[in-house]
Image 1 (cartoon, rainbow, N blue to C red):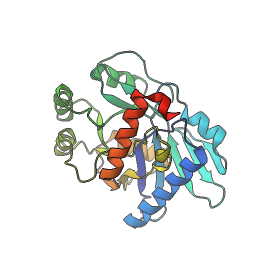
Image 2: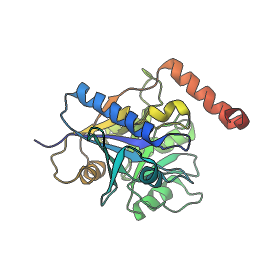
Image 3: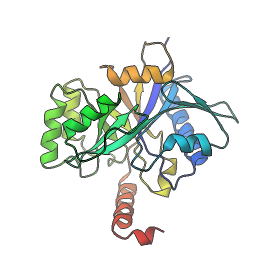
Length: 263
């Protein structure tokens, strides 16, 4: 029987996070999900999406006290020295299109071409960089004219993955573009998308994609196969509660418009 695969496909390691606390919380979330899914020793992967100025892999290598870091062909393996618990890390970046849509470039060690580009151009730049383009849902970002762009994309032939987001309000309707993607067998992903809030330091691994692939290879090789082929995926973990949703959005708006209050 093949080893199950659990991946948080939208991870940010913000500057205000403690790396050891971030990793330990992720390991705990994966352990909890494994128990809920009745999976024994699944491969657990964090897919990073660095914003401009961020270098998550440099921080993982330099600040992961209590973890042993091993370089792999596609990323990193992180082993907690206290108990041997293992995580895998896939590099990546987050880009913004001229339509103000966020796109994840998973698997890219170097950042794809910067600048103001349309969604189609950004996807092409990601593919040229040998990355996997993923469109994650975002609060208020899949509405209006952008919704039409996404709806056309989700039912078209362009090879791009869609993803749900752990910051979505619990029990809210599934966004239309994710429904379209499901209807067209595009198998949307799931990721936690930690925000630049200290409370989100312990969020990674809380909302994940789950596969049971038959392919052999390392965890990151099998993840790459699942991300690039129409392999059935399910979601595990939790979305944001109404109270937490309101608090998170209020603090984000405060930090955006009154940054001096965040210091």
